[in-house]
Every structure is written in structure tokens, then in C-alpha cells.
Length: 471
Image (cartoon, rainbow, N blue to C red; front, side, top):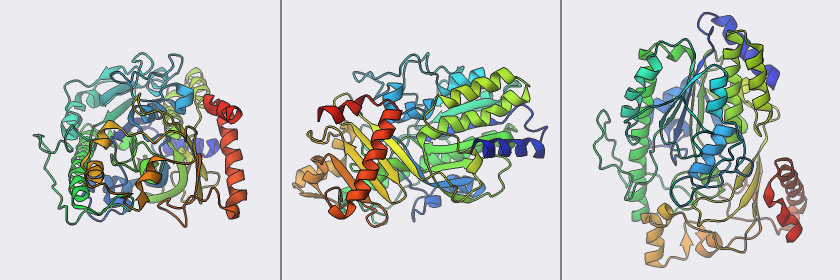
């Protein structure tokens, strides 16, 4: 795979040596609590023309997964290429939660600075310590609910007279919930509000089709469209500054949509997310990749791109440093398979969730293959805890107020009280309703996935491996 990645980089250099002499720029755009709600992912009502166009020009990954469906924890994985039990950022960074990445960890922005990049952060940060995740520049005075404003304020950084390539980490807070709703009542200069009719929004199969849920979803969709306008403006600014043709652009989200049954869970709506990559020199624009990729793969992929910078200035030492950094990560670069539909060797992903807020201890480990998913609920004796924003949202409050026993197709008690193992045949049961862990017909599958999951925990030095001994 690494040979293929180097071949693609070489092809870029061959096709446009003058353009790529300094190595390509990199933009990593991370939405906040965004699910696969866009036209390019088949959503029938989502108005996301800019993301749809980006997908038409690049590669859309159909099987892309976060490792943990929680904001701070997921962002730490994105920026380190390490699972949370390896980087130490088990949950939220802010306020009383105070989770923090190990100081010894070398993060993506620091490694890119050493590779010859200038780096900037715009919007949501949500990891610590700052020294571990040091960016050279922080774009000041931005409204993270207004991606258009954010993009405009990035223009000076993008257009700076600096021969070094840049890395821009661009993180709006849409479509994360606000204290009430999705902040759609605010004034956002440059943004055209896109309201949605609650009567026509599609209700995901894991949610109940009720008025409260539909109205909640309509607000969510409006926030998604605001995010998309910020994406369009950022692309415009890249073009206006003459940087677009030499920029690798990665669009993704930290975790699933902010609804119970998605965010903070390792069910499909929580961990299967959008990932669109547009790279100069791609041979198959509009490719839809079936490679199974994970957020631990993002940092190695970006560092793989950065090796051009080292090649461009002739520094073998920088190149070795980048390679060494990539080798310490738990993911791998997918740069070399952007133009492939079904590459070999990309057939499973792993996940590690332990906390969201500090009060939400519920460690889970997961292996997802093309057909099956096995979830290990390490502390299955505990009820599943709720994130404060999910507990207070209209969708869940409706369940409590009406005393409903079912949440969509799931039994509420089954949602809150889970067994040690959950095994799902994703191909036949995409909604993950029928746990096959105790089904004798799946005994061999269960055993194989348990062995793989345990081996992965050993390999990644998961401290929770001791639970196999104590229980």
C-alpha cells in the first residue's frame, strides 16, 4: 500500500512539477456531529451542493468510520492517528471533564510543522494540552457557527507570502446542538438560511417517526446546510488565492448526528460517517470507494501527503522523520487507494470508546467487518449513560414525557441495558436490531471476531484488556 501511495505522489510531481514543487497544501474540514446527511450520500432532501460537488471531483468513501462517537475523543484520534486508549484523551477536554492527551504524544500539527508546513486552526479545538497540539496560527475572531465568516477570516493565512505549504484545520461547530435547538435563530452574515419542512424530512430508521422528532430533524438539517455554505466559501477562498489546484482537501465529521442512538454509540449512525477527499491529479474523479477506513487513518494519510514537502526541499532527514512518525501511528495511509473502488486489504476497522463526559463511563470496543459487527460492552453491568445534550433534546424528552417503551424499533430497556457482547449481521440486519451473540449458528463467527478484537487490544496496549482476566 505504501508503494502505491508513493507512486501516486510521484505521478502528481510528474504531471505538474512546478505546481507541486513545495509539496501540496492540505485542508482538513471537520463538521461537528454531522452524519451522512448530504446529497452525495443519497439523502433525498439535504441541500448540500458544495459537498456534492466536492464528491464529484474527488473520492467519496462509503465505509468510513470514526473510532469513538464523541467530540473531544474523536478529534484526538484524528490529530494523532492513535486510539483513545493509546493517546490518553478518553473524553471531553473542557470544563470539569478535563480529559487530556498524554504530553509525550506527537500530534499531526506538530509533525507537519517539522515537515516544513505552516499550520493554522480555525474554529473548534476541544483537545489538550495545547503544547501537544500546537498550531503556528489560530484564526481569531471567528464565529464557528458561521462557516462563511470562518472562511473569509482564513484568507490572509491562505494568501500569505510564504513559500511553505500550509495545513489548515477548519472546524465549524455546526450541526452540533446549541443550548436550545441548533442555533438557527442567529444572524449569520453571508449565510442564506435554508429552512426544512418537518413534514418532508426523512426520519432515520433508528428514530421514532413522531412530530417532535421531525421538528428536531428539520432544525438539524438547516444547520447542515449552513455548514455546507461554509464549505463552499472556503473552496472559493482557496480558488481566489490561487491555492485550490495545489490543495488536498479532506471533508469529514467527528462523530454521528446528535440524536440518541447515534452520537456516543458504536451503532452505525454513530460511527459510519461522511469522508470525501479531493486530491490534485486524481485519475477517477467521482470515485466511490468501498475501502473500510477509520479515523486513525487520517493522520497517516495527511503525513503521506506531506512527504512531498520533504521531497520538494530535498531533505532526507525530514522524510525519515515523517516516515518514523507514521510508523508509530495505529492507522495507515489510504492515499494510494483514492482511485480504487474496492482495494485489497481494507476490510475491517476497530473502535475504542470509554467516556464522553466524565460522568459517562461506558467502555466499548468494536470490530466492524464487511458483514459483521461485534461490540464488546466492557462495563455491561451498568446502564448506558446519556450525554447531557442528547438527554435534554426534544427527541428523547418526548420518549420520557410519553412514557414510551420503544425508541424507534428498539426497546428502550434494551437500549439502556446491554449485554456483554453484541453481534450483528450488518448485511442482513443493517439496523442492528437482532443480537446474534447467543445464537449457536453464529458461534464460529463470534469466536473469530472475539479473537481478532482481543488481539487488537493486545497489539494497541488497551488497558482494559485486564477485564478478560478479572471477569
